[in-house]
Length: 269
Image (cartoon, rainbow, N blue to C red; front, side):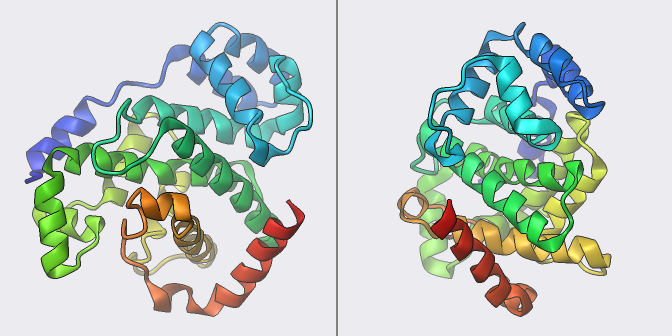
């Protein structure tokens, strides 16, 4: 089964963020979207990712958008930063999923749906800024890590879960004293992602104590959003619905407000 040594080796083997992506992010952060688009043109994989993701139905563009300058202009600074972080997550994603029954397209759709709904939530909370919006991009990393660590032990994990009904995050913590969210924090450090982003994602486990007011609010909404998304049929079929334990008491006070925001989003697109 998974050991702490395996986790440390996994973290050690995470590739650094590609230079072109880092440079593109730098231009985005200072608001120079023209230079960001020109820089992104130098990486064919990044260029293909941006075109593919932005033209997914969930973004709602009626005509295909292929020009990177147009793409960055449409996205704006916050969403461009968010999507570049999404791209970093795809570099970590496996070519073939071992634990979860996911396709690359299903994973892209999960990223897009989380990002879109998160932006709506932040607008509702009046907490929309670059780092808060980008925080959602680190959350799928926990799914990637879970698949990477448990993929080769699928039968043992399934047997353990059938006997004790434990979620993957709890199993990992009992085995190694590290959670999936701890590992996400390490990934954020390696990719020089803002500490405020990793702090929100770590708190979204629903288990962190003594949170600052805004961090708690963001963590509550992110926790509920994760479970809302993973309850969709595609992700239930993929085995993601029992990914981490749902902390009912942590989100109980916001449940009605959350459903109003999400249901409005689903109705109005």
